[in-house]
Image (cartoon, rainbow, N blue to C red; front, top):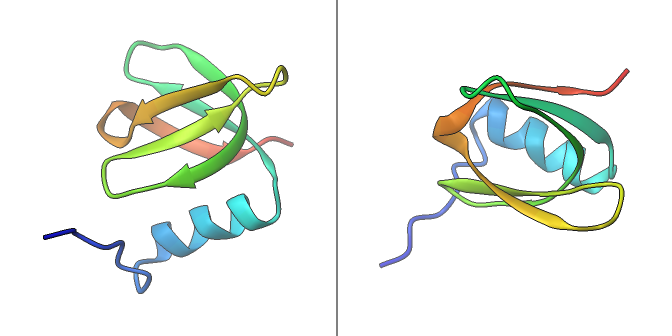
Length: 71
């Protein structure tokens, strides 16, 4: 049985907006790495970030310290 995203959660809605708008974001990880790119998709555990070379990186949500639109 598949677990679906709860679109009533503000965090899920905000990520979906960032995906639809193709906004560039900064993601800081627990390892202190900073990733920059556009979110392609999200599921309940992960998201896919495309860098400026359109290379996909799968990021586990539990590894994220913060995610914000790039100013």
